[in-house]
Image: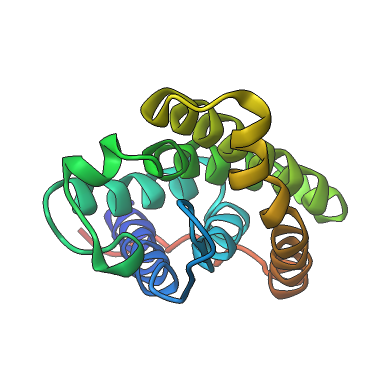
Length: 178
């Protein structure tokens, strides 16, 4: 049992690190940059499962909150979470959880649908926080924070489904001698 949990925690740390790395691949198009972190969110949920995928995004967000520069453009801290992009960062946690639902009970053919729902979750949370933190109206926030990102996120969903389609959870560690 200890081996299995150690393995899961290790994979959570690896996905948190992957998210940090992919967050640095940025195209600054406005107040919310395009980056590849959402690809890691989709893959974390799909490959680790709902609970552990969400936990990996929690680790990533917690590291950033503690000052480790894991957010886009090597940002970190409470200022980033309280800033215009903070809702997206927090939204990655439930998004990874929802992404993992598509792989429950061996039904990966619906993975794209759950990844799409995951994208909707971080779009909703992120846009609401953006509107609150910048005092922006809904249509303007959608124009800045959602519409330009839909094509890229659809491509990331397709890539994540392709990468995780044949993923099988590693077998549980066999209990060894005490």
